[in-house]
Length: 492
Image 1 (cartoon, helix red, strand yellow):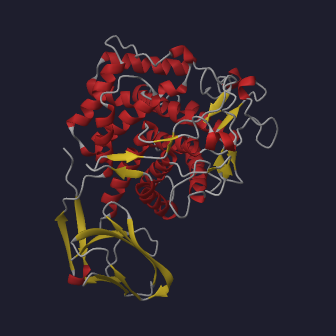
Image 2: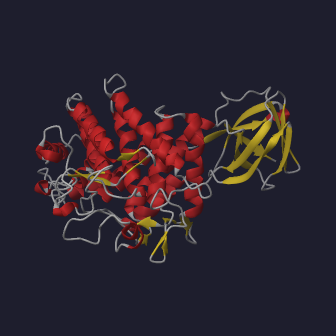
Image 3: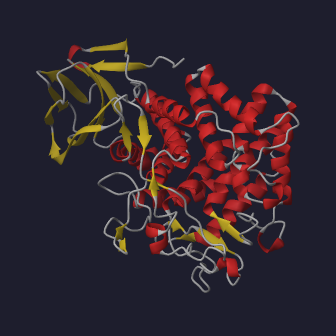
């Protein structure tokens, strides 16, 4: 059952602080989870988008409860793992694809709850794959190949697919024995793909750029072996992987700071290339919508926007990046996702739109996947936009959960200084009056779903009057002077 949510309603003009129950609409995490469960039914195959979606359902369950959500994940586990622990069709040990590892992340929680040997056997198989998995330059300290069919290649995607499970397994079963190997994966790919000029990471790197399967790779400096573009979802996978792995690593782990430093570099690039109008991100990150190829404009893309929003909100919550620098960016992004990508049918059932169907590089048998601008905008996979693909739906649920956590924690009164501002509402007019020398420079008002309803910015003044958007009693979030304190108040 969805946990009831409580908000602090701030009524300063009466000098009273009251805690009231609010029967708001279901949060977006629940609405999207319910919509996609209805669309998908029980998922019967093992692959990374399915695992990602089921993981997001478990994250929803962990926050709000509801046995039907846990049972949905459990039924998926039963469908893809037989009683002897064999993983269903869709998984091949010897294909050596990191994508096959990703569903192990949700399976760890299922095993931790159920304690059924079949799930532990399957988890051990995934861990064994990593032991046998080929590495760049055939080195014990090399990076995992993205797939066996992509020799000596590391993709940003692979850091999400492999290292999160690797870290979680090591923490759960091995006392963190291989944490250094996990950090090495990030350090290696970051050293090869990070461009400090653009503050972004190229989609992939090949240690053998002359190989026929690496025809897309730069053959010379300054980024030998790298692909040529910064793909949104690739960076999204990478950012989310960093945050999720850092959540797993112990606070006293000696090399933790190395990943924190990389994450802060990545976060700076994400913020820099956020579209200032929509709050979202483009398919090709370093360009805006004026970029065209064969008549197709660079487009805002939802899965990357969801992943960036999730990563930034979670990183702020965990104290891994600056709240002052990134919280406003993340909140604006979530509002942009709702505005630009979410639709609802006549029954209120949600859909997530403008999801890049797929994107990759090579192999030699797929020469059209060349990593060019035209490929990412017009490719038969990368240039196709779809709705409700699980590569977008899962991250949207994860981003929504982080946003809902922020909503709950941001409504506390600890940051409010009553002697700084007098806030009143009368005849549908909000008045903010500064009682100190902290003059007003910007004010934003959000509804309970996080959509910005009013924004004022101008020269610093002592008092501001803003028309509220409704006459009915409504919960709002208020931000003053970009200081990231938001309070909920009641308009009467």
